[in-house]
Image 1 (cartoon, helix red, strand yellow):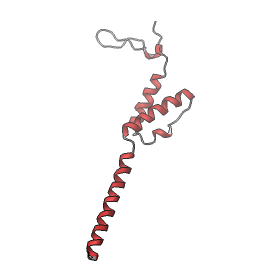
Image 2 (tube, one colour):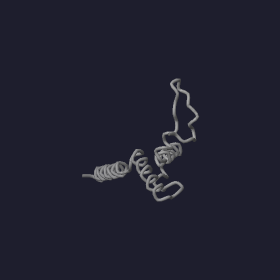
Image 3 (tube, helix red, strand yellow):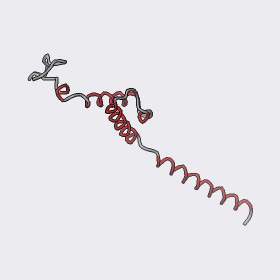
Image 4 (cartoon, rainbow, N blue to C red):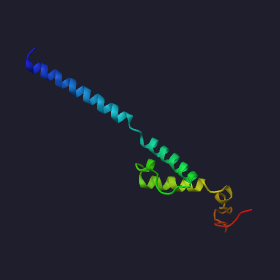
Length: 103
């Protein structure tokens, strides 16, 4: 074999090894859905512990998505009587129950 063939085979081997390594690293990264799920769990744990702020598990979550998760978490932590404060009339309008106590 001449030097050019050996160099070509070596270069191809290095390229294949690099591609395999890159693919392995890329596939081992969590998906965005996994990151959001982790953020939800961190928010729930933080609210039970009485903490405030943005958990580090939520750093990679988009700001709009984090706002929605935080709002949903806050709503889920309300007592059931406070979650059921909106009563609708048959025509779809809301009665005066916002912020008031319902029987």
